[in-house]
Length: 368
Image (cartoon, rainbow, N blue to C red; front, side, top):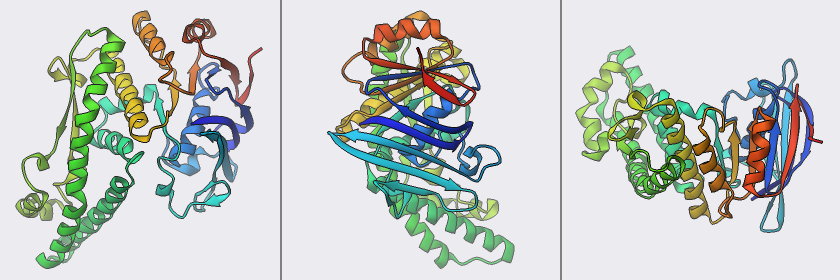
């Protein structure tokens, strides 16, 4: 999958921009706050129908304006495809492929395989379990439509069960038969989701460990552990066992929406015992593993977005990453950096054709 051209209107700090892109490497250079990362986020929008950084669509419209449009022309197997994302304040988001609007945005997920690596990925370590669940779900959903449908159906059923629990508390009544209806739906969709997450991690963990070794030179051992109440009990049993607690707290306390992915380094929690460099290497290895996993499952090479990842990495780890992306295993790559003196030697070592763009105050032009 190759992005040939990118067009922005009123997106974040861009009033208007049109970029003709290199099929190998594109690099955006500029000081912080000029709009480099916004260009990567526009590409991310075209793949996932949302921003990597801000889930509130209206807040991605340039200040005081009423809409934004992001468009991209892609090439897949010599076939050209055009994607359009348009948002007007107070209106439903529009997403089109070749001028035909999707009935459901979920129908688009997976059409543009893409992985973004950013300093913001540190939230996978620092934030709560929801972020790590979303990481797992986001990877699987790019290649498994059934998983995505089950996940959406599970979330709908969960919302209904929570509303019912709240209603019981407010009205001081209880209807076990009605609650059982939503228990059955949670089990119908939750059990296969749990099984699929386990299967995913069985295949994913060796890829992740391989990339961590390549980045760090086998400095430490790392692992991922999937914690879930459903590892030991059926969801139906858990829902029955915790019904009293659920009524007291007015929400569902058991299920795949409570699962977590724990990160370990040398057998200890990464968040507590990992250095800044180890944590950054851990997350980058996760994302490279995501890249390879999607490539294996979809049979096409994802687009790779590298947002300011060379900052705060020692030279050894920078060299390791350069060595990886220089191989034929990687296709089109987008890189942002603040330092021209740092990025030029990196681009030469990648040994692929590239385009350099200067980014300043929401303007972008080819570097002379």
